[in-house]
Structures are given as structure tokens and as C-alpha cells.
Image (cartoon, rainbow, N blue to C red):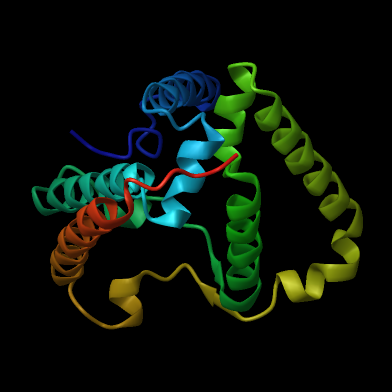
Length: 199
């Protein structure tokens, strides 16, 4: 078995779009079933009284990270063929802060806003409309900000490369961080979980 399948020619562009569509539908379904189409539930994590989002997403990250690591160890996955977006540290940091502020204000991230809108929630539709408008405005203004957008390039770099540590050690450190994060989340929910987020 050789992974990633696409890079080894198991299927082409057309099939990859179908696979992406199926995965996207499944991802949205499970987000909704977990309650992540509800802006109040998502915003509750910022009040530290319901950290379900944090725990679920961190669990997904750890599962994927450990799985990919062991697939590479046994020789089933070539990590050098896994696509990684280039890093532009300053613009991506500022972009992340803007996204985070929008998350706190609106109660949704881009993915969960799509789930909310798909299930007929008006706030999700408004939020999704704002995302589309933001994409359009950014596209129109891109020539003015292109230099900043491409500033401070670091290339396709991983944390293990950046800190010059073995990938296995990094995986172990992130798992430990997750365990500590889960323990802190449980403590916060016990202390603050009885507080209700007002609409």
C-alpha cells in the first residue's frame, strides 16, 4: 500500500473531486451531529464553560498526526509527497488573528458556518454571506496587498524541521500537550460549566 493515493496515480482529478465531495459531506454531517452547527455551543468555548469543540478538534488532530506518523514508520506513507502549504509567517499570523476575532464575535469558523447555513440557521447564513463578501473584497484588493501577502516566506516547513527535532519526538510532545489540554478543559468545565452563555 502506498499513500497518498492521488500522488501514486490511484485516481485522477475527476475522481479526487468526487472523493473530496463525499468527505466534505461526511465531515459536515458529523460536525452537525456533534452540535457544531450551533453558534452558542461554539462560542461557549471562549467562556470556558463548554470546551467540546476544543476537545473534539484536538482529538482529530492527534488521531491524524499519530496515524500519519505510524503509516510513515511502517512504510505505507511517503510524507514527502503530502502537500503542505507554504508558510508566510507575518501575513498568516495576522490572518489567523482576524479569523479568531471573527470566530469570537460571530460564533462560527468558516466550516461550521457552512454547516449552520446548510441546516437553515439564519445566523449561519449571514456569517457565510460575510465570508463570501470578504473573499470577493480580498480578491478585488489583492493587487494592493500582494506584497504583504507574500512577505516573510519560510517555504514548506514543519515544526520538526524548524526546531530540528525528530518527527516522533514532536508527535509525543503534542500528545502530551493534548493530555494536559484535556485535563485543563475538564477542570474549566467543572468550575465554569454551570454558567450559561446569554444570547
